[in-house]
Amino acid sequence: MDFGHLDLNLLVVFDAMFRHRNVTVAGRELGLSQPAMSYALLKMRAAFDDPLFVRVKSGMQPTPRALGMVDTVRDVLQRIQSGLLSPAMFDPASSNREFRIATSDVGESFFAPPLMRALRSHGRHLQLRVFSLTPSALEQQLESGDVDLAVGYYPDLVGADFYQQGLFTSHFVAIAAKDNRHVKGKLTMTRFLQAPHVDVATPGRSQEIILRHMVEKKIVRNVPLQVSRFLSLLEIVSQSDLIAIVPRETGELFRNARGVAVHALPFDSPTFRLRQHWHKRFHDDAAVRWLRALVHELFQDLDSPANQQPLPK
Image (cartoon, rainbow, N blue to C red; front, side, top):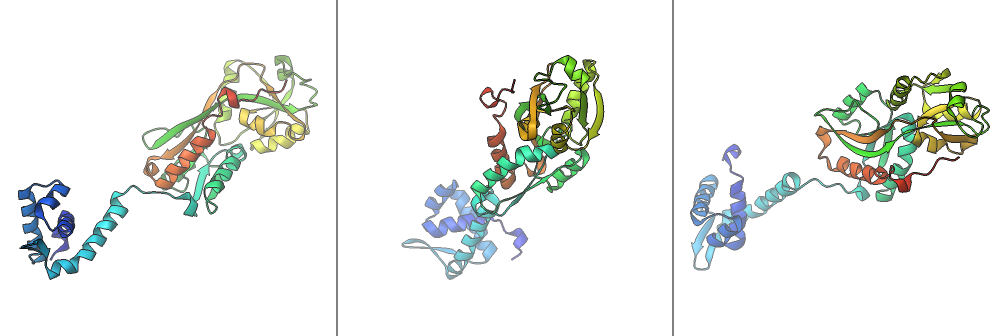
């Protein structure tokens, strides 16, 4: 028999007939009428060149050919059900999956520790890899599956190819050494403009927001130093009279570290929404879907009043 011409629905009819040995009962289970069941039996007999089920006093009994087929038929049906028809499942407790997320350099310090703790609490063999990528490289990595999620501020990841989910809203603060002579306990606009600043130029896009905002407000600063990483600010600010503008989460990381203080800006700060992004190819991937739910659970309420600690005065 040519396998390409086999109607796999006949295997379902075969299994029901083998279990019930009754055409009417088997048809009722499958939702098929008596004529439809009779037609299916004719097709089965022609396909396998055997009667398969013969009517006797006790009902429809299987032929030797049917008895020899039953285990194989049930194995095929079970494999189709579990491998094709059942939704894919992910069990973190038994998985050694390596999850890969992209975020900014400071995002590594903010997102990775709580995420890794949560992963380890669900499965001791789960792994995490964190990357910092340019926007163009990030799109390619998400599409290929080399990166599972991008977490942070990524305004370029839009369009039909990408999904996104909001996590929390952030704004900007200033950091300075506690003994910074320009701040003197409170950062006023005059002191802000007089103080020397250090800026960060990274592939991340959040700093563009505050820079554009200050241009619109005609706020001109003295910026003698520019660096490429947020994390270098901790050493620079703590050992100089420079101040820096950073996202609030960065300020929280640096709060009280090595003599660094966090201050509200002397003008209204713009806000921006941090999100998790993923490619449509992996929208229904069970492991990535589980990871997205975990990230959302960990970070979704960080902008609520209950989770916003006041800045020190």
